[in-house]
Length: 104
Image (cartoon, rainbow, N blue to C red):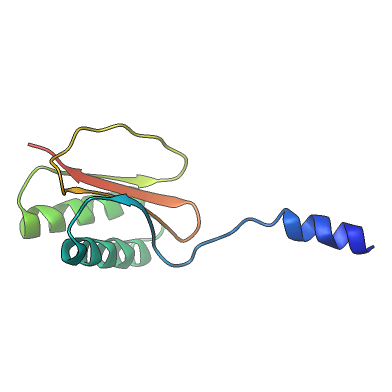
């Protein structure tokens, strides 16, 4: 029975309930603000990823200038061109990923 319990413990997935930034080249202050915005939108519109992306994009366009792009979802890959110091890739609530970048 001890081995069976060890196998179950080893198979558990690590679920992050806090935002986990995987990649960003934003300045610290901007990154902190964007993470807070992303988390609040995910919590507010948790069942509608399209609306989350739209709300984040609109907020970013108003605050940091136009040309922001946002993808919210699970199980996707990406490769983008962007303005330096204007990309953020994070996970929230397990496997929900958010990537936002600015290009002109």
